[in-house]
Image (cartoon, rainbow, N blue to C red; front, top):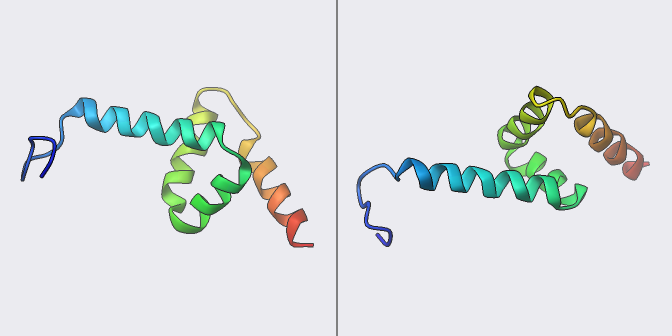
Length: 73
């Protein structure tokens, strides 16, 4: 296609870069972005929550859930 790795797996640097970009989007953007991710790509959001918990950052999942619940009422 367009990056020189047609029919092959992308280089690990491209995979890592893409992963970092998604992580940055999930972290920096609003809770609305995470809500959209939860609806469309729940497994990616789960990885985001788990990676934060493994690094010692807790409460993001709970805050998101409380915000989403309160916005429905």
